[in-house]
Image 1 (cartoon, rainbow, N blue to C red):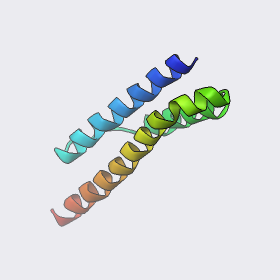
Image 2: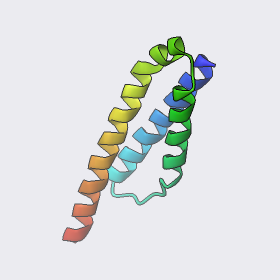
Image 3: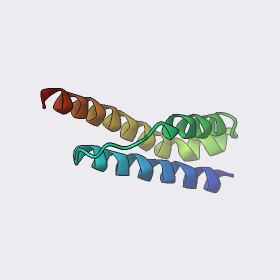
Image 4: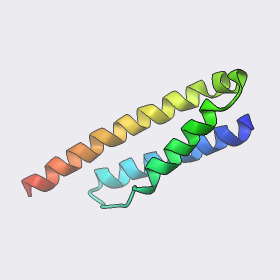
Length: 84
C-alpha cells in the first residue's frame, strides 16, 4: 500500500511540475482534474496506518510545496495576461 501510494504521490508531483513549466511558458492548460486527484491521495494518506503516513511525509511535503509553487505561477500568469 505504501509503495503504491508513494508512486501516486510521485506521479502527482510530476504532473504539477509539468504544469508549472507550461504555465511559465505561457501555455494555457486544463488542471481542473488536479483538485480531485490531490484530494483522493490525501484521503488515502489520512486513512493509512501511522507507519505508512510517516513514510510518506516527505512526499506529501514535496507535493504541497509544488502546489504552492503552482499557485504562485498561476497568479503570475494571470498578472501577465492582464498586462497584455
